[in-house]
Length: 177
Image (cartoon, rainbow, N blue to C red; front, side, top):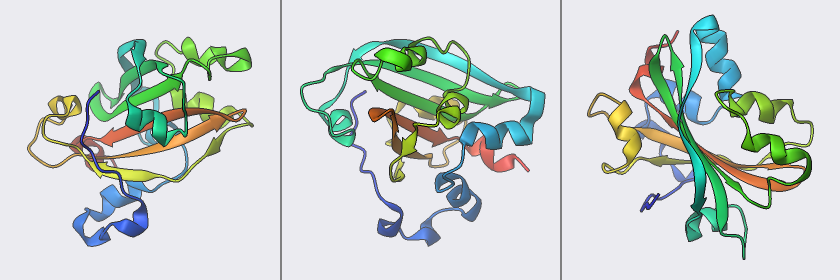
């Protein structure tokens, strides 16, 4: 994915430019999957859009503090409630992360990554960064509106090995109560 996105830490944003309920989603450090399941129950689903090997961008590798690692498993999914897309998520899992016990992350199928990550006692999450999607970003096709789409990303470390998770909150998520 080629991107000219600029990522911000919370203190770099003017919170008044974000809808308050969107801000609550962006900066919640608990499991996004668990939060959506709590609101949707059995109507929650993961729709896998793609999962394949790709070269990481220099920016993605830098976000994970990686040098000399280029190949990654890239997984793109929609988190849905009643088959309505709420979140577009993109996960970058470097080939070096998928060794040993972490091989299981290569075979998730339609299981939610969040459930696996938050169940892993070795998991550590680094600081959340947020960004507004560029107009040309492929996730905009799932927004079904001209409203700006905001997302967040975090580097997670499992047994010290990184993976980069980006989650984009589609306007439909603000309708959840």
